[in-house]
Amino acid sequence: MTLIGKKISACLHESALEVFPELSVWTFLVTNIDHANIVAQLRVMQGQIRPTIEAWPEALTDLKELADWRFAFGLMGLKPSKYLSSVESLIRRARKNNVGWMTGIPLVDLYNSYSICHRATLGGYDLDSLLGGSIMVRAADPEYDSFNPIGCSPDRYLLDERQINYTIGNEVACFALNHRDSESYCLSERTKSALFFSEAISQSQSMASQQATIALRAYFVEQGATCSPLQQLNHSIQYAVMEGQ
Image 1 (cartoon, rainbow, N blue to C red):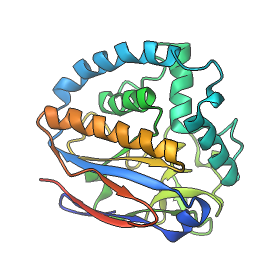
Image 2 (image 1 turned 30 degrees about the horizontal axis):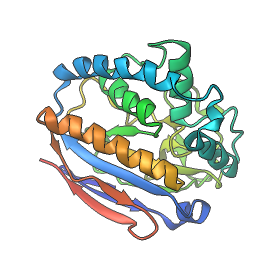
Image 3 (image 1 turned 90 degrees about the horizontal axis):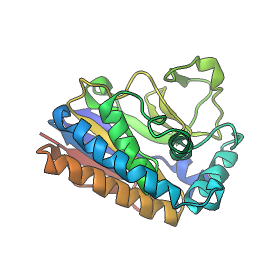
Image 4 (image 1 turned 120 degrees about the horizontal axis):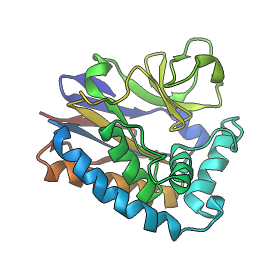
């Protein structure tokens, strides 16, 4: 994805599709984000999370969306019980504590709340931090790629060519599709423009991703933000352009 002002081009590399033929990425760009109303929406979403997750099986691996991610992480050479998908990690924390999944950054907590309720992975980048760089979903290049993970040492994450990452040049923006983001591009209280995405490696996940991104985008539109149309990348459409004001 290349940032030209508020224009973003998105690319899904063949190396990612070789590992996950059904891989799809739902994405949209949002500008003019108003943080003032996010806390109120968070309260609404918090009220939905507890009854939603209590209706699910006790064993989260009985949920196909989460089981499929465990299979995917195994294909990437990662131990699924140690490297959880972002959505499974969020749901497990939410089950333990009503606010245990929250980061304290309202914009991040907002998209995480939609992630939990829809059982879909969701992530976001601060557009201003991209500085005209380009993002690609592709296999890792251990010789040249580097990773600056949020909240821990890079030594915890050894890059392997089996891993599929979001990358900006030779910097990993998100490790193993959704496991952990880079410190360099994360959202903050100052973010005014952002790119949101949700990836899936199976049909059931793709439906969840579509529903989650539709709902999140609808919230921003209702609050007066400017959003690009929601677009899906897959084996048939590997390139798309999004534009905001």
